[in-house]
Length: 166
Image (tube, rainbow, N blue to C red):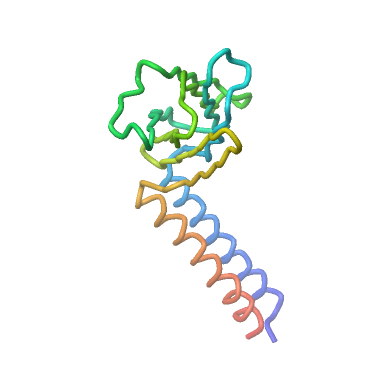
C-alpha cells in the first residue's frame, strides 16, 4: 500500500504531465477556432439565395462557393461574405450568401484557414433539401498534438493510479 506522501507525489506528477500536454496542445494549435458551417435557403430574399453560417473561426478564414453542375465556375461576383466578431472579441462568425442559385443543383460552401477546412453542402430540389457537412484538420502538427495529448492522458491516468497502490 502506498503512503500518503507517495499518493500526493504521484498525483502531482500526473497533474504536471497532463498540464504540460495541454500547453503543448495550445502551442501546437496556436490560438485558433473552427466550426462546421450550416447552409440554408435564404427565404427572406426575392430570388433563390443560399446562406452559409459558421459560428466560430479564428484566424479569419477564406470562403469559396462551388457548384456540382457548374464545376470550375467562378462565384466570386455573386456572393457576399461577412465576418462578425463574437462577444468574446476573439473568434468571428462567418456569414456568406450566394445569390441567384438554381434549383436541382448541389452547392458547397468551403471555409478554410491554416488549421482547418470545413464544407457545408446543400442540394435544393422542388420537393426537398438535402444537407451534408464535414470538417478536416489541415495542420498535421496540430492534429498530432491533439492525438498525443489524449494518448498521454489515457496512459498516465491509469499508470498514476497503479503507482499510488505500490
